[in-house]
Image 1 (cartoon, one colour):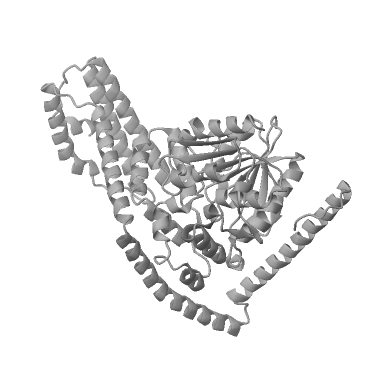
Image 2 (spheres, chains in turn green, yellow):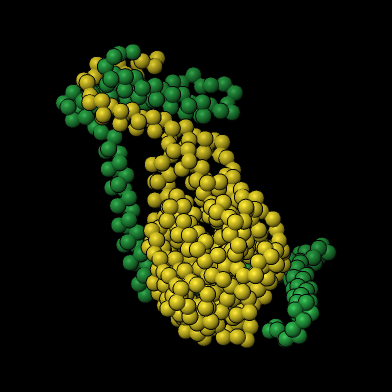
Length: 176
Length: 366
């Protein structure tokens, strides 16, 4: 390992690339009985070498790239997205967009409504033939149970109110 | 073979130690980004959500009342009323060290959460009026009984605010000590894009409900995604940028799980919600009638706090603030905090801005 900090950095970066490549190879090879004999690194080698050459040139000329470039790039993307968001928001806030959206959704309803109804009828007929309760029947039963539960809750509420009045001894009528 | 990769690279010139340190840090972050990305893809972990211990106090149909464990040093209990439909309430107890519920219970609040539940086709007849005059009063009463207190604070979040405000205004006999509206629309004339899209003459709510029965979760999702079309791009960009940070990744996993679990609306509830609130703006006009009683916000006489989020595009501050002028109390305050509709209540920003404000305001009056 070289003492030069730049060289240390390069070594670390090399390790990172190598480990990353190996991780990808492991991932790609998962579940395969035998690893293929091809060398995937060979594909990337020319790109890597060219990239390294370019980086080396920049470093030698003293215009070292800073990690701040990444932060600046992120900032640029954030601003770009924010700008798009503002433009889209303005466009979506117009009456014409609201009308367009309304038409699209109505078109969806016009298609899906009859299709849903026809499918439900078909399924109902099929289930009736098999002697199995239909979705509508199960839903009706569940609704009935919920209504019974609601009535019990209502009775419980009334009983609570009566008990509270008895405990208070006020006899004052309360609101329903 | 490894060294063959770098055959063209010679010795490098020296760099400043500061630049070197920054580049080293960036390189390390890249390594961590790769590690966390492969973990997310190859071995995704189920996020630990809703971790604060709780007990079911009451259940009616699909709705439940939860009480969270606390040391209870603050006398007045707090009833939290969230939105019905749209999303699940575990956002308020998202993850350890990132939970509004955990924050409040740690401060000694006796915390009750209304969980409206997931309504099915059998509940399509449920209306807003049912929620305000039947379910909510019952759950509020059970919370009060469970706490043994004589008064209770009520906090409505998002749609839970107009629902709970309607409840408080129409039930003067219920002892409400304090009321908080957190990002809840009150004046629907200023409700932003949803107001535009759901306007009368644009959105035929009757046709939707009559055709579909209920409003499916996928349609709810589409509406919210359309509200901010660039949201997914910026979310993924921020994920990539912060992928090196394990805390960010675990927070992202939990929030992402919640953000992709949409809930349907019962048909009649949606019809009344759109017609009475979005299209006719009856709440602020004092024209809303629930259980035979007119909802007059001036009947709210307890101390009131309204919290708006500066970048909220679901309930913009302009539709939250009007509550302050509508209530009949001198002890009232409006605050506008940084963040959006969700980041007001969940996430790092919430723990810095919103939670301490709400907790200190309530503690001083509880």
